[in-house]
Length: 208
Image (cartoon, rainbow, N blue to C red; front, side):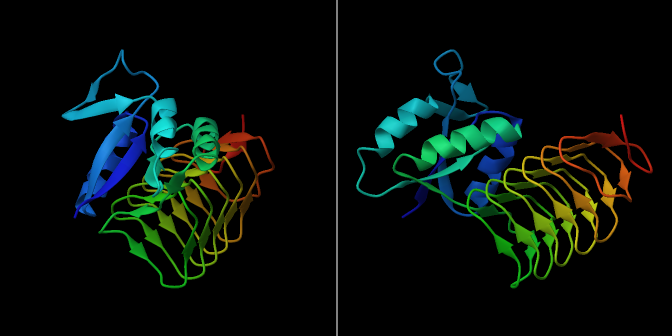
């Protein structure tokens, strides 16, 4: 029997997560706080709000499997915490074409997109997005609710803090530390450590 997956967040990001889920054999049901103003995303009907999902799952004997499909790190964290307080099971989704080392570890609620590579002894925290064709090399450590955008390359031993955003096509030199709540602009090259709460971009990346 096909397993059901609830997806919280009916956006472009949610579409890609639904595609991954269906390739993995799930049937998907969307929930979005714009309901009932918004009733569909492409051919998928939206079933209700996040609060509606929580009401439903609290009446079930078996927890509902859920993924939060929201790109904003702060909102993804808020929704995840809310769902964890109810009878929900946050799962990890990995696209069939992603390559994940047997020695890598991924926490719950993380989604790994097509063509991504996560190498040996890398650690990826809860609720992360490892986007299309991103490379997370050996011994990297990615904090909770961080977004590694498409075509990012993190060399070995890179640390990225919680709720940070590494923009599309960026490159990070080996053994660099990027703090919490940082934003790395698209196409940047990071060659120096970045403290918490800083926005950088450029090649080499500098604070702006």
